Length: 128
Image (cartoon, rainbow, N blue to C red; front, top):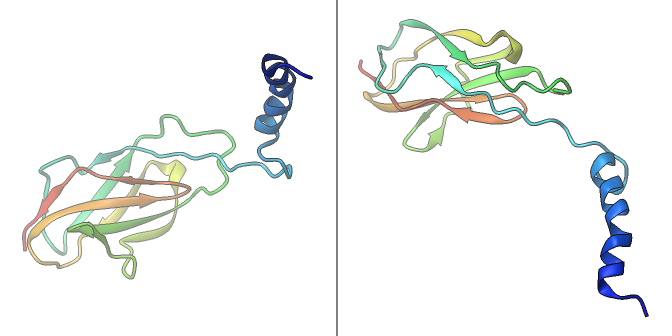
């Protein structure tokens, strides 16, 4: 009979091999990068039809990043407008993308940046 402490010691190298390999079937996990949006900042006021440069931090970008293409959406009341991206097809490694604020109802909005993961900007205000 093998003692439970011995079982744990025997299992440790196997678990290490699984973690290093990615999964049991040998496929690797994609790196996840969640860049922080640095502009707009909380309380920024944007008017429909105006152009702005959205920026995000490149800190923590993994070397094994698999999807370097980004999409930027507008969120209002927790609903992301996926049917009308503000920008798409840009390089996440650029750290910025220019967009034109659409004409929307006045209210509080966020930007949602998606590449291999997602990040939200702080709440900012749009005024028509």
